[in-house]
Image (cartoon, rainbow, N blue to C red; front, side):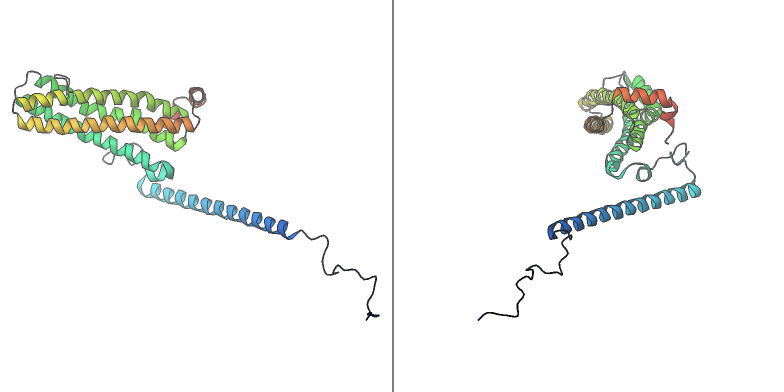
Length: 261
C-alpha cells in the first residue's frame, strides 16, 4: 500500500550534518598532533624549570662556599662534575677523574718502591729515588692542567680546541705510562724490570711494592687507551675539526683555555 503522506522531494541526507566538518579520520589526526605538540611544550617547560633550579642551587653554593673549590686544601679553581658536565657525559668524566686519582696513588707507591730499591743496594737506587720524587712533584700538576682539565672543559663547552689539547697531552701521558710500566733502572720507575730484579734478589718489600706500582701503571695505560678511543669517537661524532679549533683560538685566544664561560 502506497504511503500518500511521504514527501517524494525530501533529501535522504540529514540536515543535522555539517557538510563542512572535517572527516572523522582527519579530526583524529589533528587531535593527536595537537596533543603531541602540547606534550613537547610541557617537556620543554619542565626542562627549563629543572635548569633554573640547578642554576639557583649553583648560585647558592657559590654564595656559601665561594667559586673555587679545588684542590680542597688550597682552592684555585672550580671543579664540580655534577654542576658543569652534561648528564650524559658525567660517567665518562667521573671515570677520567678517578683515573687521575689512581695516578696520584701510583706515583706515591712508585716513590716508596724506589726508596726500598735504594735500601736494597741497587746501583741505580739514587737515580730512581730522585726521578720518582720529581715525578711526584710535577706529574700531578701537569697531568691535571694539560690533559684532564682540557677534556673536562671540552665536554662542558663542546669546543674543539679543548679536544685537541687533550689528544696531544693525553697521548703523551699514555706513552709516559707505557714507559713507566717497563721500569728501566735509573729512570725513576719501579716497573716490570725493576720488580723482576727485586724478586730475583729476594728483596721482598721492594718487589711487592714494585709489583703494586707496576699494576698501577698498567691501569693507567689501559684506562687512558680505552678513554682516548671513546673521546675520539665522541669528538668525531660531534663534528669537531682542526679548522674549527683554529677558528676558536683566533676568536678567543688563550683566554678560552683558562676560563669556563
